Image (cartoon, rainbow, N blue to C red; front, side, top):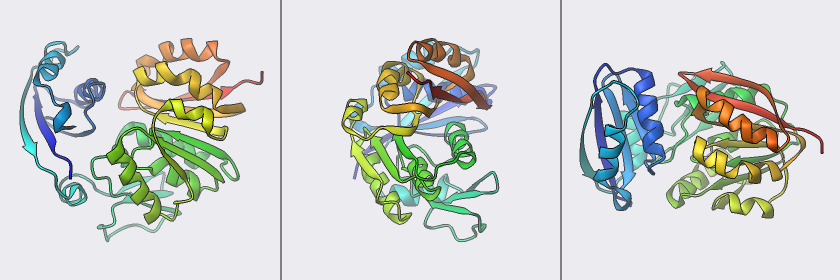
Length: 283
């Protein structure tokens, strides 16, 4: 089992924007999981990647007026399913159509789509705004017989929903080996193990089938670096759903998207996080 460092950040005048900004900054520094609350944020990073000087830089350069203090402890490898179940992961309902819960939950509403996620340390339970925004898009889209690529699949939740909604050819890609193993387990639990789950990054895209729908819920910097590869993997007329960034980041992403013949269609926002919907214009 993997050892992690748990870092507790206490934030003065804490609010959702402050915890979201801190989580975004830490995400760029290879932190994997975040649990916000009324007083701050708890974040997790693999022990071998932990560097206290990085924390000091993030805190000292924090772009808001909040005062941030922190402390950290070693969390030895353990049953992360149990820890999430006991402390963090609660069932979530999206649009009265989809319920997401762990295998340990019992009092679950009966809805059209029932997704079981045992998240361990992988991102993507549906609780974070970026994941739920994409889930809402997928619930409203026609996916029957569509081909889908889910870049940075995390727990596999978006690929699972695409499968449930009728997508016929789904490729999910995850760079983190632990998250990849977790996604394998979640796909099996949800009878979605026909999803082609790959371990790697955007360099794998030329070797996979082209998509009618391309999903990337990662972060702004990765999206800006890899969006050309995303575009190359999307069929003409296909839809690209991007999230993992703030509404204020949309102009810089659109600046690059327009150069690739990706046309803005719409975006949705929750807690300042955004999901951007683009269409690849015919070439």
